[in-house]
Amino acid sequence: MQDALWKMSAAAQAQAVRDAHVSAVELVESHLDRIAEVNPQVNAVTQLLAERAREAAAQTDRRRAAGEALGPLAGVPFTVKESTAVEGVPTTFGTERFRDLVAPADAPPVARLRAAGAIPIGHSNIPTLILAGVHTRSELFGDTVNPWDSSRTPGGSSGGDAVAVATGMAALGLGNDSGGSVRVPAQFCGVAGLKPSTGRFPADHRILGLDDPGPASQILVTDGPLARSVGDLRLAYEVLAGTAPVPLTLSTPPPSRRPG
Picture 1 (cartoon, rainbow, N blue to C red):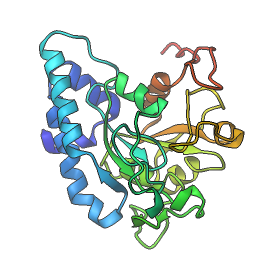
Picture 2: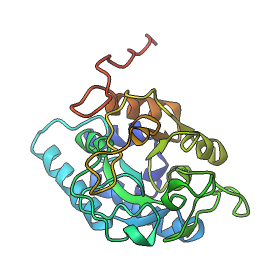
Picture 3: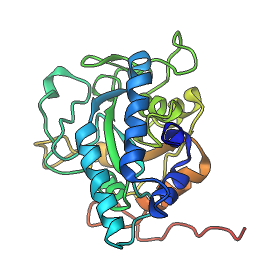
């Protein structure tokens, strides 16, 4: 069954972990095997967080064994765009200049996904400094290719996440969007993507060392998930949405699900 785990929806993966049908460690290993198989051809995952992911998965399994309730994304691996902070990992923006720009803390959406039980499994490629167009090519990591036709672009700037999700290297991707950076690669790679309304998700888009970011970086850029189904996108949305003690977050609750 382990070989097929990466093919399951994020919702099904989390349910299987909560029900002890599979371990979180098995789930992570299935995705790591998939990354080893596929990433050399598509170059979407830039910084693999294998040992961190294994330890987070083992901790999830220990919590389940102790009878603790697990979150709605228990054990689900996700990728994070190279412009979004993961604690203890460089946030490179795809450029040599920021190769060693280690993040002191998770960005708010990363923290929310973790709190729901999801596990960051790697950073994902972007155009250099996010500004190098809608093709995912970075100075630091090179070109990411479309998973269905390597002669074509995966779009951008969240192309690495779209490719990782489309190929099963992660169940969810965390990108961001100001002018199509989630929506374009989602369309080009055949996955679902969401650009939420400004303020729906808590966000902090400061580059390390800039305590007073310009308003454009806070207002124009919105974090958004990518998934292989609208159902998984909704699950990620419900985890990410809601107010927080950071600028421009909304207190209005997400819309409730319709009956049936």
